[in-house]
Image (cartoon, rainbow over all chains, first blue to last red; front, top):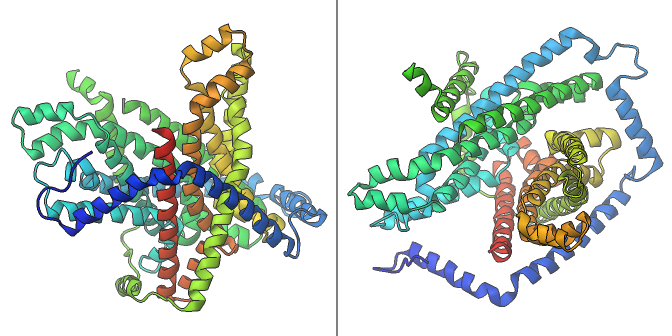
Length: 302
Length: 264
């Protein structure tokens, strides 16, 4: 364990020490047993609450009436029994869908690249060993506070879901691709930053020690010791997150007015259920395509 | 030729692809008409200033408490249902119960396809479809969460079951155990800590997803944030957002503690 208590006591150091003290008391409580009990309690309470709430609805979920409604909805999606021909039988509708899918893809790429750039620029500032631990020869109050600020920022931006960020951002930016991409980027910046800094914290320090022993300065050590080890993992995470982002892009599009999401929302509100089917088809193709591309690109990181 | 082979060096190639992707995506944004609202900057000021004017009235705090409980209830119920979907599919899909290689490959491909479909559609899209199909029932939210999460859990579980070291399993097999016994006494105990740890991590994600789900009108934290922003009540919106952040930090701390205990 690193010792943070050398010279004068900064407020930050007192905080860190308090955390360590709390952690050392935990075994007394039997965390796993307590968690198991709490989990069981939560499980029972949640299901009771949900069934009770459902019972009070006008149409309870488990009833013949809701089954009829659900079947009717499936028929609407398929366009059975409608006078108008279904949207998915119209090739111009498919082309429109292709255009929207292209926009959605661009939006997801912009989002992941923005968050990746931001994470690459700051991940070292949130790595404990680089800022405070054994890779920081003389960590002062400044590096303690930078570390805390970066960590708290990551925790905050990733706690707030993409959709909530989008709701806020549409007050500032005009509707379109950019606000959606920014909302996705903000949330994923927190995720990527945390994951990458954890790679740095868990990395093999021997090559870095060798650099230090050869007289390398701090910048040289980070550039030639830390970065080459962290980069492949960072790129893998980036591509994994892209697969998540493409699934979420449609959701952000509901409010940020870009790509498939906006059109999905309009079709749902106008009861154009056969277009919903077509858009879902494009969505599935997009998700599948990105999964394939991402797994091919991941090979290149090795 | 040397320069070509250097270019094709895989990591450099990846960097070029990524930079190209960034340039392409930046170029597809319509910059020329301006991207900010005319009042965009002042709106930014008002919204960020409102974080210091939180709405802490009794009414809002009461709503916060109810919405937070609903969010947790959705997450817990949804995840437990996801476990019911994901665990059997994960076990079958890992193919470890089949002794013939041919059968194993068929089962793996089939189940992987099902799992891939389950997790390809976002939970909010499912929620919307369910609400359109059966109306506003909390079970719509639970199902919407359970389907993609079942797909994710199934995939991770099947990978865990496949990656168990062979030696102890072979010992069991030599003692005459069937594949099912090998699974029960060899594979499951070997991966149980990691399995529980990962499920706990997914619970964390489930809270965030449940928040987003409630936007379709199912009354969780996301729904409250949405209404507050519609009313331009930024202070109230921040109260709910910070409530959400608090809830997630709490669950993260819990899950991290449990994972440290059982995995190390």
